[in-house]
Length: 373
Image 1 (spheres, rainbow, N blue to C red):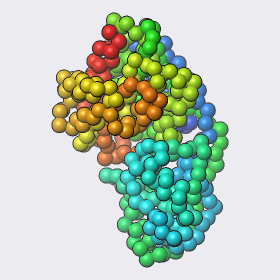
Image 2 (spheres, helix red, strand yellow; image 1 turned 30 degrees about the horizontal axis):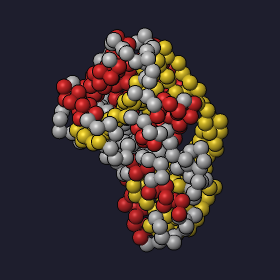
Image 3 (cartoon, rainbow, N blue to C red; image 1 turned 135 degrees about the vertical axis):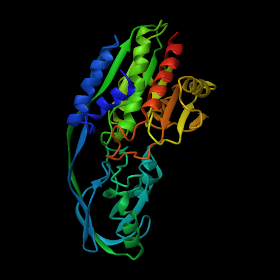
């Protein structure tokens, strides 16, 4: 399937937040595509506590704006008080962040809310479109801290002005937590242990076509190539759920099978924003000396431009590669940038560079087939 056809089909499922209808339909579609490569493919249930949104808004200066509660924060039927900068003594703290600020567990904002004296916090998330771009909820299974209302980036200047003069406001952030179900997709090709692991997340806050679609395309393209290639070792391909909920699906998979993270011959992590229009960076990172450079060479050979490539050995891995690193595994990871990151406007075709996405997919397949030989 051409990259453009795949990404257009990916986009049609709409919102694929873990546990929703789009999630379930997209999982079944991808399972069938994986099975079509010749791999044994199955959906593995992942039970979790799903957050169901209730009323969520901030009212100040005679104006009400709608928002979204932080999925791993507290809830409230209503808190009134003065607004002030995050970290101040004001009852309601105000912060302005980018959505990637909460990309790893234990991030600075999580620490700020843990240590906060605020009764509630409102945070405006800045992106190119300045719409609502939620923060990932790394502690969704164990919510903590004061209620946090997330609002669109376009409200940042208004909120900062209110906070500067200590304006009064009322904040509501409600919802319920109910049993939910998502699925990891696991596909396997036979061979000797230890296996090669292909890893990509498959759920997200919205449709997220540039954020997630390029990684899923590369995952499927590599699986197709591996199914045809001579192999001296097995292959496990994991498309995990709950990326937006603290890598929920990866945690489930590695709790069930720890060696998959720690002992695989190599983990190829196909992360966020692979083939995003307007991307200025593609980070190629590995904790194996020389492997990031090898991946970069494969990308250039496949037609990806050299200029956006940031080649890094070691350092702190991001996305689900962080789960591999934390468990002592060997990985190479690809993560790009995205002006529409975590926004509902990340849709086909305007947010996607299909030519780059196809080059990344070809490069991932080339490296994967080299590894299994």
